[in-house]
Length: 139
Image 1 (cartoon, rainbow, N blue to C red):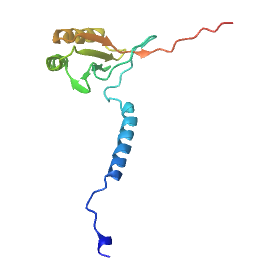
Image 2 (image 1 turned 45 degrees about the vertical axis):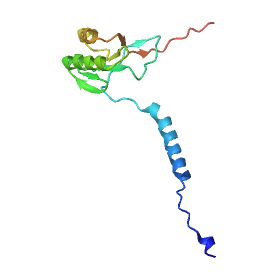
Image 3 (image 1 turned 90 degrees about the vertical axis):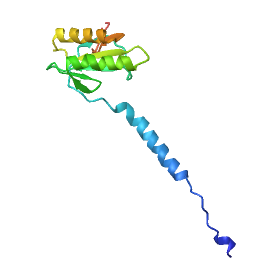
Image 4 (image 1 turned 180 degrees about the vertical axis):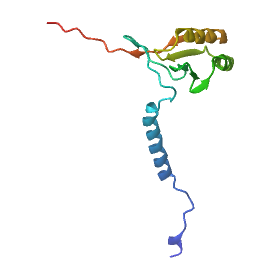
């Protein structure tokens, strides 16, 4: 009778593993829906587009002229310093995407692009929205 009541001193990790896998799946499904919050901008529209890779740097220029680099508010001078730090820390060429409101002063966009080139950014791209193309109806 004493042999039947032997205690098991092992921890069963199967339920823990099940819970962790469920959490992993939930995070994998919800991750694409997380959008970086920043300033509200209305982008110009274009007919063709390329997708934006998430590992690139993003500069948002709001309608009031304020700047946000990778989600952090910066002035035009801080923007250049921040980009220089990013370029110095990176082993690969640094890309910058500029997402500016369509009502933003053109001079501010050019100034941001100049500062990015001086900081050592390899490639600068402008972000826009895709315009709905009209499909001609043949009769």
